[in-house]
Image (cartoon, rainbow, N blue to C red; front, side, top):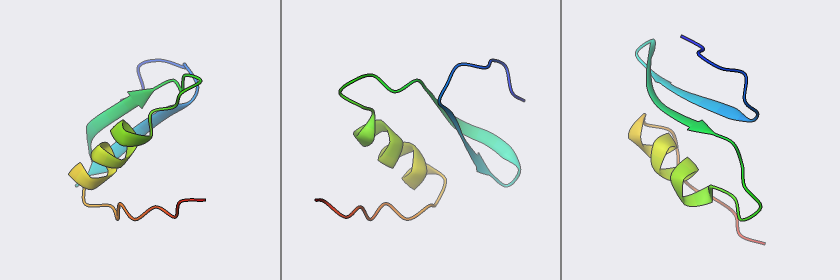
Length: 50
């Protein structure tokens, strides 16, 4: 269930259920948390570094 409208908000779903939620994106980012949450629901965590 969406419980707020903060942006950006990432909902990570697994089997139709919200397993993880990441809210906001500070200046330094949330890259590590984003990748951990993605991996927790079975999404690929490969990132191309520039």
